Length: 193
Image 1 (cartoon, helix red, strand yellow):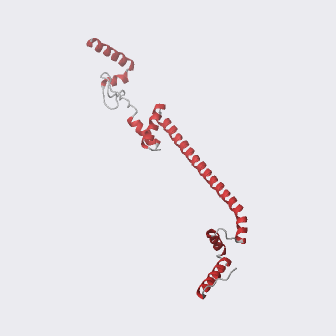
Image 2 (tube, rainbow, N blue to C red; image 1 turned 180 degrees about the vertical axis):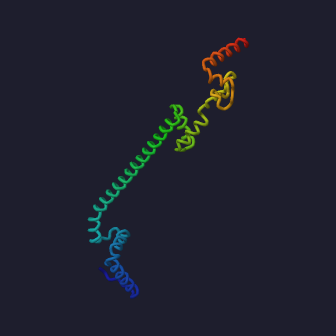
């Protein structure tokens, strides 16, 4: 190799750079990282210990990557199973509440459909509130019985609340009172005709 002349400063700079690089590559804490950096910048650089580490580490790292992937897949599957179980339980609880409301309010299938429609419309799971709303707004109200003009609005058959002589007769002679009342009713209907 031919000799090249360099000035003293340049030679000192090269010497210091060589010493620094040698210390970095041989240091137990920074050596491996320094060798990887040199290899990254200069792919042709060869380091025997780095090559051995890569030969040993590559299959292990591949296996670890596969295990990590498998573990992540298992975690996702368990999370999905847990979510599905929670949804199934929530559906089961909701159905139990619907069945309870059906029994308590004597809802037909159409009534329960109204309750479910109310739940969906409000985005709620409060079955009792939906059933109450359906009872209030959708179920027709029973008509109150209005007294007929020929029916007494207040009956005091035993004469307890008021002293009525016609009831006193009922207590003395029930059969005679009945005969007299039937005769009176028949006379009233003949007079009205």
